Length: 165
Image (cartoon, rainbow, N blue to C red):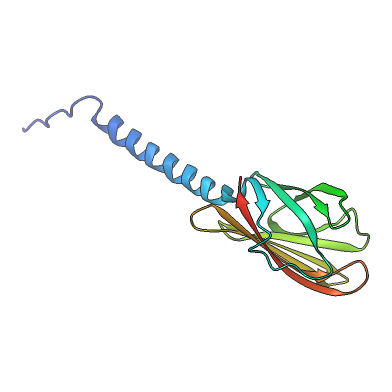
């Protein structure tokens, strides 16, 4: 009868630990990719394409990204020199949520890619606005594309380029 050679203690532990570390690194890397939007961004007016009815002197945005919620804080100075700002929270799960500030409107937010968040606003099933926020591959530039109908019923579209602060 042949006896099996006993394995060195810790060998299977080392293999299991290596696999566990590799999985953790992959999960963390995926989370960091998805969170590339997180941080402070300042509008680069020279690179932006602003609509004539939506001019401003300065703008900045901050994104805080969690698994089930994205908090968007914006601030800036309008053309009259008045400070404006606010915070919105969206849920990037592809489901409809009522917009508290706009009765009868809902919004749907979802990740198009790990670096691109899309938010669509609807009223009575009809799209009334669309915003996308896409981070460049080098993670230094954010492109915000905004399309919709303003408070006076006029359509607008603009592309605002932000630099990471």
